[in-house]
Image 1 (cartoon, helix red, strand yellow):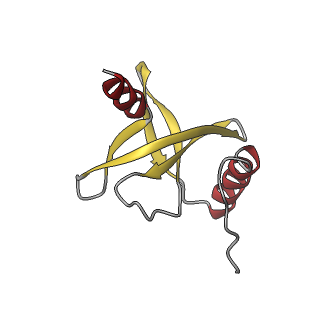
Image 2 (cartoon, rainbow, N blue to C red; image 1 turned 135 degrees about the vertical axis):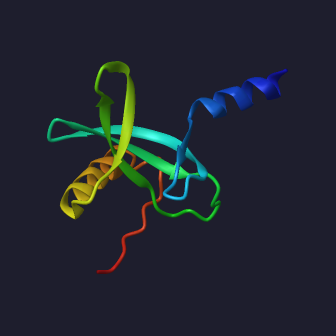
Length: 102
């Protein structure tokens, strides 16, 4: 029975989104970061065990449905970098971040 509880707890952190082709893709929910009065969700792809990049999406409420939210891709590179820097600082002891040379 302990195994089922562990699986259920693990599933609590899993979000399933549809990609551009309509395929279901699983992500592990890592955190929500607030930046400039907007909330951004930080996700880690679960299908690719070699995943070394997180996905950052902006949260938006669904109009007329206060209990629903949608995830919107972020095009602004500066915003993505700022949100990721906040995430890195918050989780510097939990993850081994690798700095890329630009």
